[in-house]
Amino acid sequence: MSARVRAVVAGVVTISVVIAVVLFVRTAYLASRDGGVSPVPAAAATGPATPPPAGAHIVFRSTAPGPDYGLVAAVSLDDPAGPRASTGVACDRVDAVADAVSCLRTRRGVVTTFEAVLLDGSWEESRTWPLAGIPSRTRLSAAGDLVATTAFVSGHSYAATGFSTQTEVTRTDGESLGNLEEFTLLVDGREIAPVDRNIWGVTFAGGDRFYATAASAALGRTWLVEGDLRARTLTAVREDVECPSLSPDGSRIAYKKDVGDRHWAIAVLDLASGDESVLGENRSVDDQVAWLDDATLLYGLPRPGEAGAADVWSIRTEPGSQPDVLIPDAWSPAVVRE
Image (cartoon, rainbow, N blue to C red; front, side, top):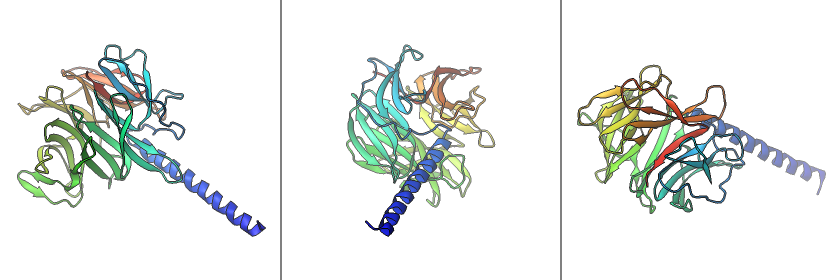
């Protein structure tokens, strides 16, 4: 090989390495801005699946330092602060029900890609498909037959201007029920043109019904919408609502509420009366809350001053309740009821 050829090869290798490093750093930065939690490290690959403990349990993404960082773990619902079992599955976001698991994750390499993974009740992969961008939100229906995925196509945070999302609902057998940005959006009985709409934060309500967030940057408005998968409609129910989560008994919706300067409080809406209660969490919560039971909410919060660290907190929905750490070194909780 001539000196010139060797120089060209060396240059190509150097450029490839630089590109790979730049892509990894950029992706890690963007993903870490969504909620302040670092993505799965490059070394954290999916290992042998280990089913979680028997009975009702909570799954979450571990943020504990060490080899399990970025892997999904589980604790017994009866002892959330007790021993945790690592599943060996790497996820940026996770949701789970008794017989299905939805996992959104980042695949790093010379070209970074993103994917959704569906696993069965034994945590064995049953299906994977590509995501259009950085993983953001995922939810399964209670029956485990529907899965919603949200990715940032551009931008990296709901606090950023000019962000764009793609939210899709599919059946767990692979049939797509559509990109929700393409559904008809109705506000006060009038159709809102799909110029710059974004839809995210799906929570299923049974059958073809679901709730989600709809937003229009041009109008500067955000709504809680009730969706219909069969009619392909999104109907505004209430303004200034983001990332809804329907209670197990279906009577209330918890969500994050912008109380000014993109500071998100946690609020609960009674669907029958229309009464809204803002809870006693004074920190800004940029997460889609989960219901531990009909009176308790779970959510992740980054730990101040500790990059990549987070804890899962709980708060009762009664007036005056204060938050407590439920699971340290954890993120993206999901309650699995057997």
